[in-house]
Length: 247
Image 1 (tube, helix red, strand yellow):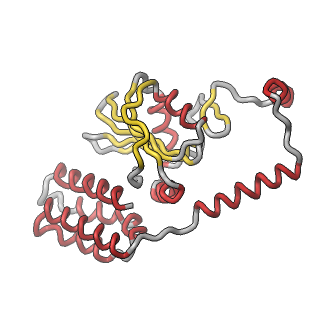
Image 2 (cartoon, rainbow, N blue to C red):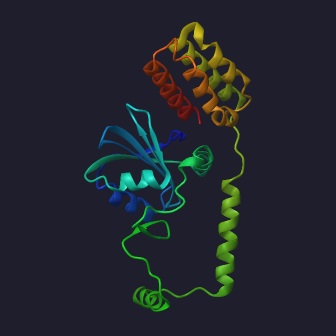
Image 3 (cartoon, rainbow, N blue to C red):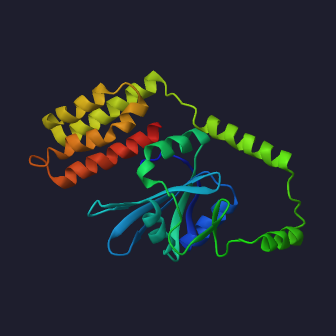
């Protein structure tokens, strides 16, 4: 998953991944959780949150480079016990960017056997009117009127529109990003970097560069006859890191 660099909130957070996820969901967290682990092979997983809701998940296999995304990735991550995770906060702008850049990793539904409440995971879902009324009475919660419900919906929609407003990056930052990527390509590929650099130079914005990163990856991997696969993969990983720092 390609995610903008976030602000470190807690590094080395310990516990089961499920408990970490639930705690962040309940707090209305926006950002992502990153964890490295080994089941069949060493892997790195990320879960993206938007205001406490899990919106995307992805796993990158370190050796095979295989990707697992969406609900399948979340299911595997939820099985992790006694893990050590790093938590990073993101602004609304960067959450929106991450959601746009990782469409294939969107969690459209929770893994089979999981149930949810607003914002996260739960062991039980309240399904009947009697259950809802009992919970409301227990905690002294008043059901909102229809007018209040309508206003909540309006506010939520307005918030969504604000989240999706396009953001811009200064021309100076964009040119610095392009230069950093081109220098990385030259460092790893030498004179063979021209094919990769041509794609980078043809981009006119950070957004376009991110959208066309698969082209950069494809151009680099087409050189596997001349350059080792490991070197190309290392270069692409370094480029992803650089992009994350600039956005």
